Image 1 (cartoon, helix red, strand yellow):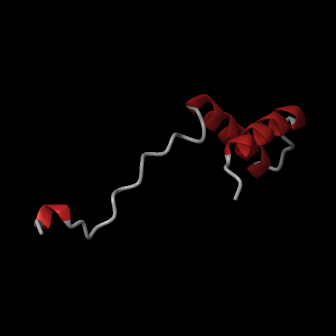
Image 2: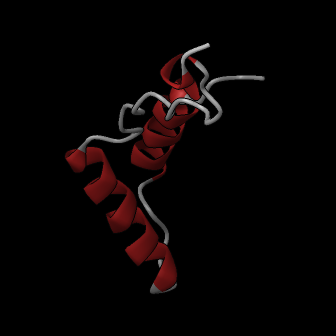
Length: 60
């Protein structure tokens, strides 16, 4: 038996695709900034962003 053929460590996981684009990440930060300042974010924009994020998260 060759030592090279006997793997004892797990293979590294495949790289994950980013959950957010840069623009979407900036949108999230904008909404969070408004909320942290005590304001109310644009409901339509927040709902759109939330529904798109939820669609990308795999279900169990």
